[in-house]
Figure 1: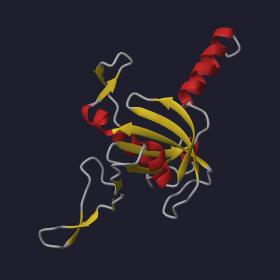
Figure 2: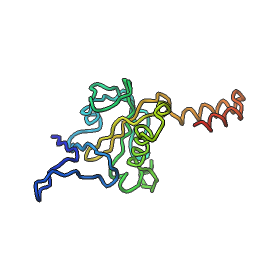
Figure 3: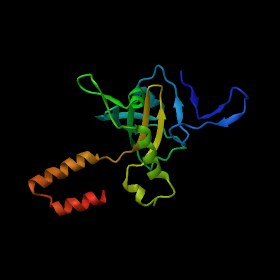
Figure 4: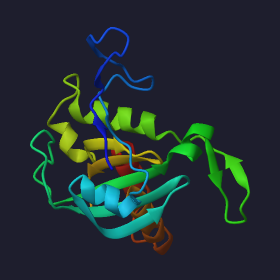
Length: 187
């Protein structure tokens, strides 16, 4: 059922092996064409099992997953869990989301750019690797015929939840505005 292609494919015209480049990124991506795999099965086929759905996104879902089979070519940063953001390819391609009422709305989400940024911040030799431990780091990226899957380090806490918690503390007078501004500046 699955066909894997590491972008190292044979050119049918002259049978010379050539490196094909992705239009959206220069990173080699792993393609899996899965006409009959659902999200849960696709994630499992890549060595992860869903523990918990964390959230719905504008174009998909976010899951916390346990690593059940490690790929020797992937750096998991000594973690047992990861976060996987799943994005619908059709919604991504059109730059749309579907609202609760069923209407479509144009949005500015781009999982490919998000992946490229996280990948650059995590793995680029231009960055100070000591500081990379303070961001959720890139682990992997794969896709099916209907979805993109961005695998990142499990930071355990969501930045949005942290901001909401701090705002509640500000309202209750348990966090000084000056202290909050210093934290935001560091973030």
